[in-house]
Length: 112
Length: 118
Image (cartoon, rainbow over all chains, first blue to last red):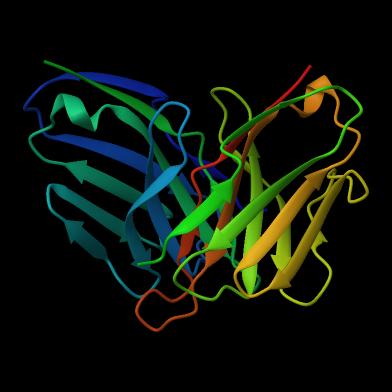
């Protein structure tokens, strides 16, 4: 059974800092990995999708890497801003039925 | 592109009543949609996989007679919470799986529905 872990559960950083959010998964036989952002009381916004054959994806200040063999992914946020404050969820897709398994998320607070 | 909507965005109902939540893919066809629930400060838990034209597949521990899923078209899936109880109060989120070559197997999520059962 796939398990996804995100540690720490919460993180507080000053504005402008570069930061790395970690995600680990137990079953390396994945189809893809997605990073999402969730604001309080809201749905999910997809940030980056990395297919199993890829090693990284970039979008603006965000860069996500995938090391499938070691079961790890990182989300790098450059020059963090208060508007980046949210919960960041990592999810992996395994199995032919395309199920996503989510981590519990990292709640990020960027202090002005 | 790849927008998924949910209706209603929030609903309050009395215990014992049934509530229907709609999930629509607005600009793409989705043969597969997924229903999740999320409790406060918890992650998303998959409830069931909805396949167009066939019966939904429920995750272990999810009562199929309580959470009725209908996926009657390529753009619409509905979740009906029957005989709702206060413990069913949660945030319900749907997603639709893309089969386009550009975003193959990517899931796009709706904005969620907050259900409160009194």
